[in-house]
Length: 82
Picture 1 (cartoon, rainbow, N blue to C red):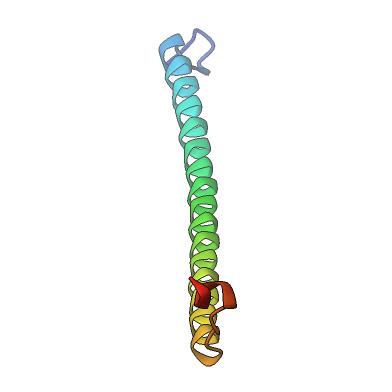
Picture 2: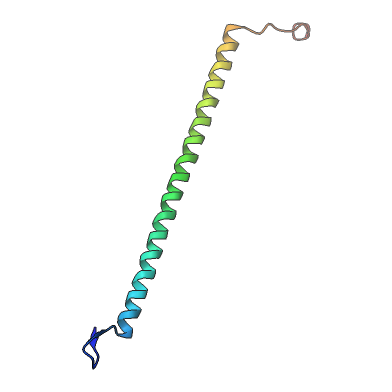
């Protein structure tokens, strides 16, 4: 800061520009951090949903396999005649 003729402090143009640039950078970095948090949460949710789907597919496949073993499918007459 510099003093003017009346003895009061004055900000120079350079200091004003520095403060403005600092504020812009701080706001930008804050926004980037917020967006990164949103994306991280979204990716986590997608991975969880895909994992749940895979679990369901495995359970359905296992249930179908067990059902097939419990109830052996009898051959049809067409298959016997062939």
